[in-house]
Image (tube, rainbow, N blue to C red; front, side, top):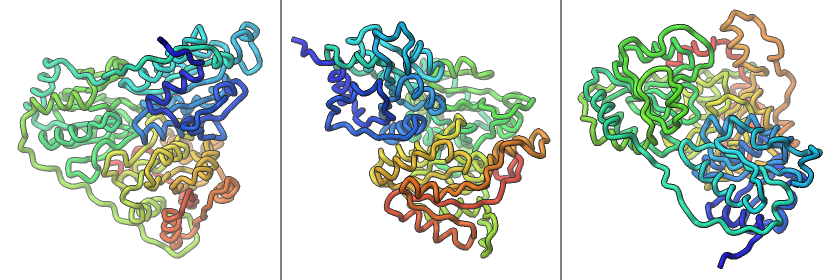
Length: 538
């Protein structure tokens, strides 16, 4: 005999069974009945703005490897969150978004706070969205949403629930599972293996899919078996390959002619979980070098459909690489010359803007071995990676999408999912202001997080892109007068401002050793290099 529950009870029962017991959100009137008799074994994490709620949930998901639940308020709350939803979609982060809606009886009159066509509102940046036709269908819709979110390519999903649905009777969701790994046909794998075995100079490109799918051991074995150098795809949201390995070459630039130039001389190119044609600025020229053959492994049919050149192979990365390893011969290729280690800038004992490279080098020397880096510094991204190599899976997170405001709340959510390891958020002064409210949530949960603000008092990346097209100045790109430590203290967060390079090491030691969140505001010199033309971009 089926046990009758309310929609709310069946909803939380399913969440409990799949491990979604932490709820991030910012509540409103249409969510109140959802939280009646809130289960004691669930935790509600309050964010002060909806972008923070979604991005923090994403950080939690990236830390746990499971989907995380977010509750938002009707149309307005969902609207506030859409920049973070966009990032979660592009970065393939499984977030289950449940939004309130006005009562069903009110919907024909377009009520205050109601969402017109709610399932369409977040599209196309969710994998699945629905408002069920009947209240009793809500638990089954949640289960479907969860399974879609967790099926490769993973990503955010959206469920709208009218506020009067929660009290209706419903049946429990039956137990079932989805086995989501899949691989290419044997013929497709043989084709790629034969190309690698016959290649004179193959190269691998690693994308965020490698880390998303826990495929690094196989990818590392494939690189070492073929002796192929390894690049990381443009603007990747993960690392995906140990950056201190002899085969690691660096990060491909998001500019077509420059990317093609990096791959010159390679007759076979194998991209693994990598949208390698992610460009930020336009240039003419070949997509890949003339005479090169490109093979592309990815789990996303849409990604394989729009790739402009090459042979795409639809597969999850771990399964596809495992199949390749059974077919690829051991190559006898010499290892490439190791990458040159950049010299640490000098420390000067004077009050002046500090070299951002010195900040990164000081962080590298002081950072605990098990720390997790979250980066959102568009102006300094290439320099950052050149000076602070990521060497272990899960040790680095950023956005591959570019909507600012992601970094700080992702760091908070990742800290909440952790086991006490230090989370280090390196962020620009422009980026932190999109979601500075995340500091309040960090303080409420006393998360082990150090925020290093590279404060060049402007939108440095926009200025650099302006210089690229011969603009001497760009209106609206200066940000003088923001006191980040004062802001942090207003949320209850400790911090310190650094204006003298001689004080940097002590500030870093204090911030990294602090019990709870800590902000270090470092006044750095403006980056005057042309974006994507830096000498360290390798």
